[in-house]
Every structure is written in C-alpha cells, then in structure tokens.
Amino acid sequence: MKLSLATVALALAIPSASFAQDSTAVSSGTYPNTFSSGSANVSPFTNQSKRFNDWSISVGAGVPLVQSADLTSIKNGNGKNLFGYSAYVSVDKAITHAFGLKLQYDRGETRQGWFNTKDAAPDAKAVGARTQYDALSILGDINFSNLLRRVDNHSPYRWALHGYAGIGTIAYRAYQKDAKGQRLMTEIKPFKLNSMFMQAGAGLKYKVSRRIDLEGRLMYVVTGDDEFDGGGDKYSAINKREEQVSDNFFNATLGLSIKLGKHESHLMWHDPLQEIYYKLDVLANKNQDIEVCKKGDADNDGVCDDWDRQLDTPAGARVDGAGVALDTDLDGIIDLYDKCVTVPGPVENNGCPTTTTGPVVETETKLEGIEFDLNSDRILPSNTPILNNAVNYINSSNGSYNVIGATDTRGTDAYNQKLSERRANNVKNYLIKNGVQTGKLNAIGKGEKDLKYPECEPATKCPEWKNRANRRVYFEAK
Image (cartoon, rainbow, N blue to C red; front, side, top):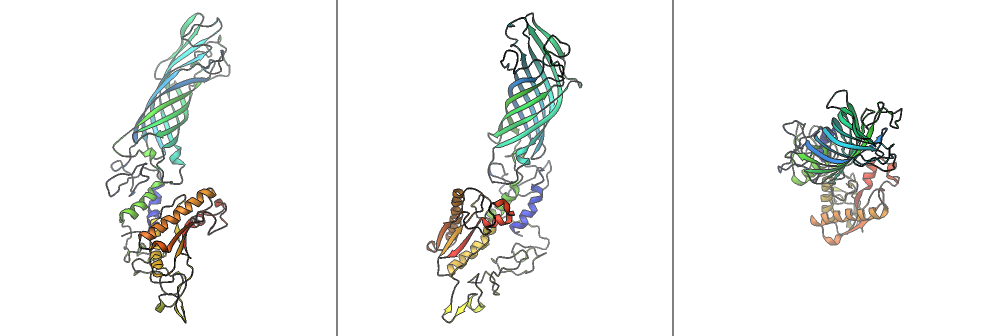
C-alpha cells in the first residue's frame, strides 16, 4: 500500500539519525552516493548487506617542527627555523558515519638546535641536533562534518573536517653535533611498552573522487621523553629548561586516502540526514510502494485503515490526518467536488453561493498549503494533490489568477525576491503542464514582504512550522 509522505518520513527518521551504517537499496539496482544525495529503503545494518565502503588506506608526507624542548626547530638560537621531514601510512576503518579508527605508522626526522647538522658548527658554543624516529599508533577519527550536520541541503558536499587523537609507541635515535663533531646521544629501540607517546590534531579533507580524498593535517605529538631532542637531564651542558619533561613537536602533512570496496559511497562521506529526503523523492518519482499498514489502506488515501475515520474517501480527494476528506468552507461538499472551495454554497449549485441572477463564483481565493523546504523551489510530492485540485478549480472558473510566491525571513531581500519568483514560476509551469491555459496565470514573487506569520521577523522568533508556512505559494483571483 502507498503511504503518506508524513508516515514515510516518520518511519525513516529513527534509523537515519542513529549514525549506524544503514543498508540501502533502490529498485533500479544502483546505490546512493554523495553525488546523488541520500539513500533509499532503510533496514538494519549487517556486514552481509552493507551498502557503503568502510575501509581505506592513507599515505602522506610533511614537515615536523620541534616546539617544546631544550633544542627547538622554531625560535632557536640563530633565529632560523629548521625543517625536518615525515611520512605516514595508515589503514583506516570507518565504524559509523562519524567515527572510525586508524592503525598508523609514522617515520621521520626532526632537526633542532642552533644549526642544521648537515652544516659545520658556526662556533664553539653552537649545538645542533637531529632525531630519527619511528612510531606506531592507534588513532580515533571523528568526522565533525557528519557529527554536526543537522540540515540536508541536498548538496554533494566535498569538504569534511576530521579530528584525530590516539596513543602508541615510539622509537628514536637522537644525534647531537657541535664543534667537536656529531655523536649519538640517545637511542630507544622499537617498540617497547615503556616508550609510549600521544598525538592529536585535525585534518581537512577534500573528496577528489569517489575513490580518492586529499587531506591537509596538523598533528601535535607528545613524546613523553626529555631526551628526544638530543638534550635533556643527562646533557646539562645544553641550555636546557629545568621544568621540561617532554619534548613535543608539530607535524604538518599533506596526504591521500584511497577508499577500498565495490560500492559508490564511503561510509564517512554519507550524510545520514539525506535518508529521509531521498526516500520521499524515490516514492514520488518511481511510484514505489511500501507496505507497513497492518490492515491496509482500502481507499488509498495515504492513511492506514487502523486509524482512518473515513474508509471510502473518493479517489483524488485531499484528506486530513484522520483520513477524512477536506471540506474547506464547511458547506457539506468536499473540496474535490466543490466548485467554490472557500465560499459555502448548496450542493445543487456545486458548492457555490446562489443569487437571483444565477450561480456565481468567488471573486478571490487563496489555496493554502503549498509549502517549500528551506532554500528550495522544488515542488514537494505532498503538494501534488493541492495543485491537482487547483487545476480543476481554475479550469472550471472563468477568471484568471495570480500565482504568488513567498519566503521566510532568512536570507537577503534580493535573494528572497528571486527565490519567491522561482517558486511561483515552478507552480505556474506545473499547472500549465497539467492543463491550465497559459493566459489564466500570472506568476508574481513577493519575497519576504508577504509573511503569513509577520511575527517571524527574524525567523529565530518562531517555531519551524511557522517559518515553513511562510515559505509558500498561493493563488489570488485577479
């Protein structure tokens, strides 16, 4: 049985908001991806039925700078910065839309002190150092772009902000050089449990394609060791800081992530809030049926028989939440058969009032209920019955009508004016496509100048249902 859009949205809202990996399938056999916005039939996730890639491999290279140590790479004795090199490779597993784990190997060399150890010591007092390190760590990966997304803007978004933090074990060899030459100062062999370190930072990803991401990352590494820089307690000849207990460094990298698997989308790029909207599009565009009513929907009005108060609603009639056909003017004639929807009249005159000169039609009508999503001019499937009734009404009348578009108070005046014009023209084109004569309609945009709820200025003063009611198209007789 076909469900109303409200029922489908309610059924899909719970699983799509859970951030668990959903199983999705579309009747065409293709899978949703972040370029097509969203997914379709939602069912509980299992490893056998998953529809997203969740493994990837990342590689990158960059520059480490020792920042907190006796010997530093920046603000050192000669006023110059000493740049080392670093590289990493990791195996990444996405667990949900917003969280994953990385097993990462880092290798690099830091350079610190008064001069580069590749050069000769400039004087007898100058000290230079370099540290070659290898590290193995487990990092947690939080996708803030999915965690904090609260509105599906139907956009194929390509940027994502990630946060990383984790622990591991580090091995290194620290060399020191002065006027007497270079020598090994400290060596920590891999990989001992007592050589633990921590790192945390952030990365900004850009999706180049469904297979490749480009990422810039800045990490801060806490070594937990005062001798990592080639100085420390054992080497008091160096101008050490007595309070220093850990030599730490920044590591700025640029890298690539290669997403593995046969599916179109990766789990970390899938927006879970797109589930609901894509499902509505599928139902509207593919006439796809979903059967969830226990007792069915005998009159096919979109309301399950379990709570339908009118089980014989005529085909095409608009109904309320209880399945009762609407009668806007309360004259006893449902809107489907009423020639004057907003003005009461007797049944013998098709719901229009009568005078001594014969039947008349209303001089002005406003058909409410044609509402739009935020920042959108797309006609929603829930508006189709209203517009079909408008086609019948306008064709049965002798007058012409203004199709008026309006917006809420978000956005600039100029933007809202153009948006309201697009909404009005979309509705006008729909009516013409479905049989209304072109000369009977005139599209007008009023922007935010004709609010149904004027108190919603600014929009934050009102609940969302009032702002949605301001984003509308209605009709007025000329």
